[in-house]
Image (cartoon, rainbow, N blue to C red; front, side):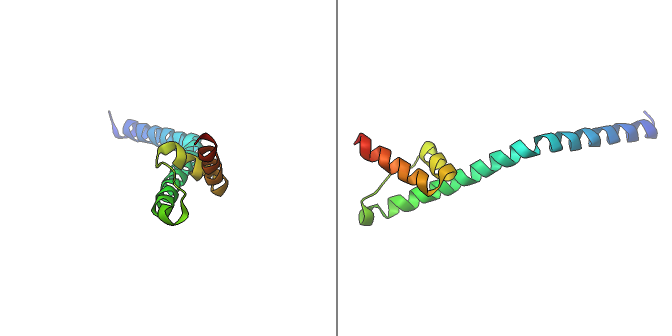
Length: 88
């Protein structure tokens, strides 16, 4: 394999990498945003449970609750508290 073949192969590989990154950039960005919001939801759940002796409100710290709070925000927290109140 001579230099021109190696160069052509490198340019083809670079083209394929750029194409794949452009095609999958939007879904990857969405997944990263949901993951970041879920981590913030975990933080909100931990803060809620730390303040539980003062407020009387507590929720389980799990992925589903964190995802709901992370995606829906404060209305999601209200929704979880309402469903806990309804089922207890």
